[in-house]
Image 1 (cartoon, one colour):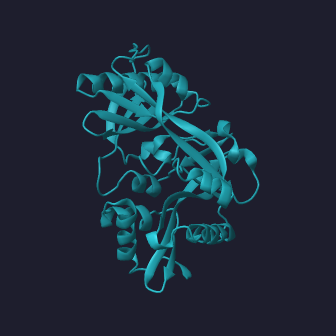
Image 2: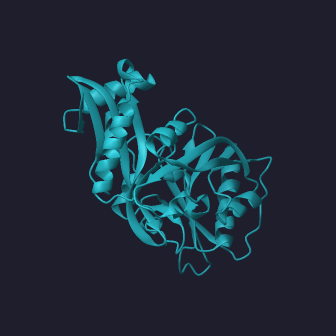
Amino acid sequence: MRIRPFETGDEMSILDLFESSFNRPIDQAWWRWRYLENPIDKPRILLAFDGATLAGHYAVLPIELTIRSEPRLAALSVATMTNAGYRGKGVFEKLANALYGELEREGYFGVFGFPNSLSHLGFVKKLGWREICAQHSLTLTRGTFQPSVASKGWQFETIAASDARLAAPTASPQGVRMVWRDAAWKWRISPPIGEAYKAEIATPPDGAHTTATIVWKRYGSNSIDLVHYEASELEPLASLVNHIATSGFSSGVTLFNTWASLYDPAHHVFERAGFRAEGPVTYFAGRVFSGEDVAYDPRDWRLTMLSSDVY
């Protein structure tokens, strides 16, 4: 069996393996966008071939982290597939260890991801990952919504999700977070298919600066996911959440979803608005290649739905 990086011309073998693994096809334009057009770094896809047969596939997405305000290159684990005839033979472990070795040699800080309930223990026991947290979804319904009245006359505006004001958030002097700057932001929120991302901002009455932003998109016919948020203060974020929820419920939305860690001050904003911790629960784990235990402490991470490749 030969393990090698992705080469142009491998696309159809990968798409075929995806369809046989997950019983559904994948759009080729979406696949190219997700795996080949990421501007942060070159594609990180490793393949295992047995002759002409694609036996296994493992891909990670290059991401940027800030760790105590310092930028670090890392990887988000996203796509593992093994041909049915090769399962149980250690193909994935070989691919993963080979890819992690390559990433470590090239200066990557580590690899992180959101493994599902069937795979996360395998990552921990076989690949040296450590569990970091279990992220609950926060949900808001009309029945739990607690509307509030803005106290400072915040102004709200709908803007394009590609707007530069949404990129390059202020890095926290402590902790770990994923960031998308400039071209990386535009890439992340511009998939070729699926629901479009939209954005709202809150500014003070004088309009001098933006103090809170929320990026969202529809899920199904009557739900909205608040996938990312930034705020210099909690009050404008609370007013913006109230504005979006009020507008949504009045237009037929029945459910809002978001993520906010218990250790994120924004959690209190969502809780006061009526968001409640519900399923599904998403596991978050990772493997650091060189020290820095800060990356294993859930109190140090700030995750939003946009941190995951699912949303």
